[in-house]
Length: 315
Image (cartoon, rainbow, N blue to C red; front, side):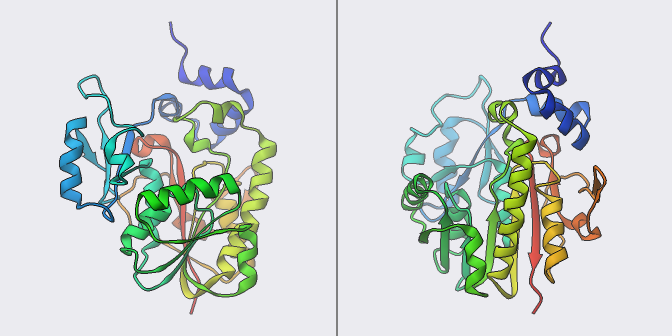
């Protein structure tokens, strides 16, 4: 008899299992954490018309539209579908599609960018969200795509070039942007995190997880979100997102911003199912405003776990 999902994670990393049983102890949560992740792609309309690329993709099998992203599609991966839709396929090499997890498509949609504006993607590599932003403004905006590590910059540049996305690439510690004043109409901070939401993609994220890393990342994320907000123009929009489920990296980071800046959390209007954000966790109480954030657990939409907050700086 095969192991139950709970037993798999308990044996893999007992501390991980104990921690996220407090976040969501449901049987369904652990069942979906153990399930393989559905393949999803985003069609890059900078390189081809949506309908034409869809016709090309039909040879790979059945496509199912991602409800919250017009250009996003789940790709059938059952035995009835032919093989071949991977990084070696022509559509990917030509930049017609970008392999992107469906929940990762939410932040650029929620950001709601407009042409002619100044946009910062503070932690941009490998470039999925940057290229998504570029296609929404049809390359008619000032986009700064930043990351902090040289190897990641190389990957970012490669993906921007492949997708014909125009952006100015910088290599800088994101915590420095706030020093330069209110420069951007939109800021996306898809923050470095403990990757708990990505466990469905690779169990290694559960195996290497540690509470020590979560605490260190939470401190970094709090510094980054203050910098991101300070670099925002009056009336501008900041989207904070992570692919993790830990309240210390999600609600607590937003709460930290609210406690230190005159920020406004806005409701997220997107057809995404989620669970109720935490107002309290392990004795820590958070602002009532965090209830407007979007917390997505794997079982909600059969995706990775994700967290998204849309924040505006008052005029």
